[in-house]
Structures are given as structure tokens and as C-alpha cells.
Amino acid sequence: MKRLNARADLDMSELATDIRRWGQEIGFQQVGYSDINLSTAEERLQNWLRRQYHGEMSYMERHGRKRSQPGELIPDTLSIISVRMDYLPPDTQPVKVLQQKEKAYVSRYALGRDYHKLVRKRLARLAALIREEVADTRLARAFVDSAPVMEKPLAEKAGLGWQGKHTLILNRHAGSWFFLGEIYTDLPLPVDGPAEDHCGKCSACMTVCPTDAIVAPYQLDARRCISYLTIEHPGSIPEDLRRGIGNRVFGCDDCQLMCPWNRFASHSKETDFQPRHGLADSELVTLFQWDEETFLRRTEGSPIRRAGFERWRRNLAVALGNGPASPQALAALEAAIGDPSDLVREHASWALRRLREK
Image (cartoon, rainbow, N blue to C red):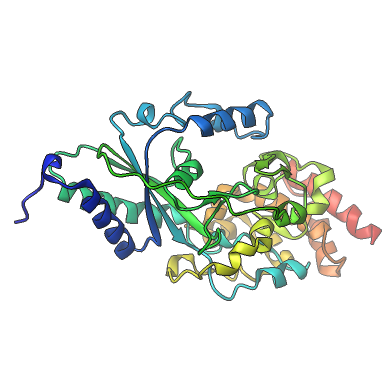
């Protein structure tokens, strides 16, 4: 039986090396370490909230200082382990789908199974290995976008990348197509240096954004962001932003597609992230004709469930209004005028007016 080591008997640098190796063996592409000082990120967050850039994501205002003070969220936290996992599926031809206006564009991260379960399970395995190695550690708590955790500033401090002008984490060798996760621990692990910003004078992400959501370098107004509008926003999509949505029905990847650092991105080999149910190349009309039972069956275990059936239909109506005025699209929208949802009816009516103007 393996003898557990007390932390006093361990070389923390050696332990950090072991944790990196375990993480890579488990399936993470990178592991880094940071302290718990997020004072700069806290100030940026408060400024962002004061400007109301979070829209109706009221959860961003909750939990007091627990989001920016890890020790208040999880007492006794001394270090944070940050990891990243590539998710970009191969051969999904995102630019081609965006150009085919009769097709539905789903953000590449949402084509497969919900990443939360996979990444959390891998993090739990890593946390278990740490507890097996260190006898007197009481804390190895894993998070995957599931608590008030500032994952991007933590990843930046841990050397996984820098926060780009589009506010996503960028890595010189891997671009931005990856998920993040964290383990809060009471071990005093040696910290990595923060990543250096390599955006330079490039403003490609700001230029390409269809709704001008990147209002300044490193500042995102979520109220204009297509990902927010199609996933988080519960109500009517502002009319002045609907045309910019194009055929994007769940999320948006334009800022990532345009970023020059993503030429270094690697495709994921994880089967869970591979497209399911033809969502990488589906017709808008076909998806709009799903009933709720079909939606629930086809999106089981998918991030798309977060939007729900009503918002899914709302988004598809907007995309149909931005697409070609085919007899099939017109018929589908006309049928939706009798939809029981006020939200769907409103967006279907707008889409019909758009198509009849063409």
C-alpha cells in the first residue's frame, strides 16, 4: 500500500511537476499555478458591472467578493491550479457554414456533449491523485464554469495565456479554442508567471464582430454579443442587432475565427467534442420544424439545452429572417405565427417581414 506523504516532507516544486504530468496524462493540454491575488481583475470586474455590460446576467453581481477573493469562496485556499483542454472538432468548416445562409451556425464548442461533465470528471481525477499523494491536504476542490470563479484572470496568472482584446484567453501555441478548469488547493505550490500580451496592434476581432460588441480593446459589452443574445438573454432580441446575428443560432465564433493566433490551434481528439445529430451542417428550416420533444431528444447532454426550446426557436426565426426567402422558409415562419410563445411569434413576424422585402 502506498505511503501518503505529509506536506512537510514534500518538495512543492517536485509535486508541481508531478501534477503537470498527471494532468497531461489525464487529457489536459496544459497545467499552471497561480496565487489567489485577483485585486486587478476585481477592479476590472467592478468597472464592467458598473457599465451594465453584463446585461441580464444578474449572477455576475452575486456572491459579494467570493468571485475575486478565492479564500472567501473556499476557505484555506493557498494556490489555484488552472488547466486547459482543447475542444475544436476537426472538419466542421465554420466559415463555409457561416456563408451558407440557409444553414444554422452553432458555436463549435456546443456541437458535441456538454463540456462541463467531461472536464469536471478529469479534474476530479487530478484532485484525487493530489489527495493520494499528500496525506494532510484537506482541500482539492474542482470547478468548471460552475461557481463564482474568475477563470480567465486565473488562467492568465497561471501562464496559460493572456486575455485578448476579445477578452478570451489566447495562447501563442494553441490559440483560444480550449476550455478552462480550476482546482482550489491548500497546498503552497510554486506559482507560474503571468503570460505576456501578444495582441500588439492587431484589432481583427474588433473589426469582424458582427454586432460591434467589443466596444474597446479588452472590453466586451455582453448586451451586444451574439453569444449572450442567443444563449443568456431571456427576452426579445433588440431589432437593431438582429441582422448582425446572421445565421448564428447558438453562440458566435467570429472573433476566434479571425484571430491570427488560432492558426496554431490544434483539433481535439476527444470523442465527446465531436459533432452530434448533424448540428455542424443543419438546415435552418429543418431545425425550426423540431417540436419540443425532438429538441429535448436531440440536445440531450448538449450545451444547447441551456438556451431552452423557446429561445432556440426565437434564434432560428431571426436566422431565417436573415436567410434566403425560399418557399420552405416562408412556410415555416408563417406556421410559427400561431406559436403559443409570444417571443417566438414576435421574432417570426419580424423574419417574415424581412423575407417579404427581399
